[in-house]
Length: 392
Ligand SMILES: *Cc1c(COP(=O)(O)O)cnc(C)c1O
Image 1 (cartoon, helix red, strand yellow):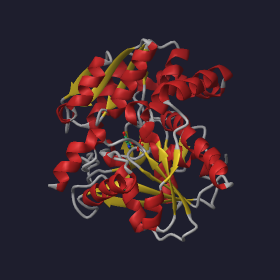
Image 2 (cartoon, rainbow, N blue to C red):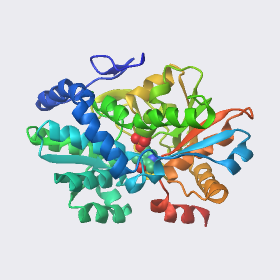
Image 3 (cartoon, helix red, strand yellow):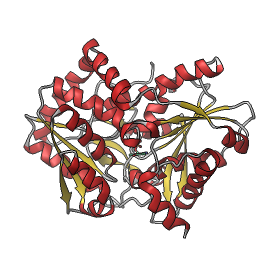
């Protein structure tokens, strides 16, 4: 693969590792350790066995007949919603916990917004008998009560964070603070392609299983291993990174990402970081950030808790700037409509995050022969109330 992070952790201008002095050794150790671990046969064998038998991979690539007719293309859905715990996040937590074990760490911390990454982390910690502490904004603890109970049931301790807006961004800051206090024994499992180098690269590599499978499954189904379009939603960017990973250098493949427009990119209520953000440093990386003129982080707004992040993974900041990714802002109402449409036409209730990707279909012009692969990042069970409230 030609497109790679450079040795200092940059994707073009974006990325790097901007961490406090006290974390320098931790981050440096991880930078030195991650590739040898990832590339070892021992790791690959354990990781692939867990993906198969525990997560339930390969996830199906499903030909969506009625949606294909509606949009005038050949639409395939990559069904990450069928993974254990209901989303793509577990691909990453399974991999990172194995990495933590290989590095001799005994305590796991994580940040979470909607609670999906927290649940995926608590799940693999139960599996691996590791101590698990999850940082979550106090506002989110209230909004996502069921996921909080799931994490506790799985044996994790959940710390409500009461600084700032008391949401995801504050939970990330608090997790980094905790890491500073326990650098020796603690592994920080980051949930998306964000944070200081090497996290964006680690998470992208863990999720790259998605496009590895798409290649094999397309070859089997249509006799060629690439689509004309790849579509995914983007919050921090991990399911999108996994979806495109093995196709970034392949210019036959168009890449379309859907970020959360909220009430619209011309309002104050948006999470469309690539449209509205400017260059800054957030949670250890140089990237696009929603901020005011003084560099104060502005709260992101979207109906979708999983896309509610005022930053974006540095890899996507770079690929979007270079024009390799076309990024669409999808508003709340468009995502809701698309979620209902997929439900009624295919019998699949998508996560509200994934519904943003579905909504992108109506903004593109396809040829009838175009093969389109769209990643359904998660299932919508957690979002039923959101769907119903938005409809009434
Ligand atoms: C967390 C989440 C997302 C957004 O995270 P990315 O890192 O951008 O993939 C999207 N879909 C679902 C179902 C999620 O849980």
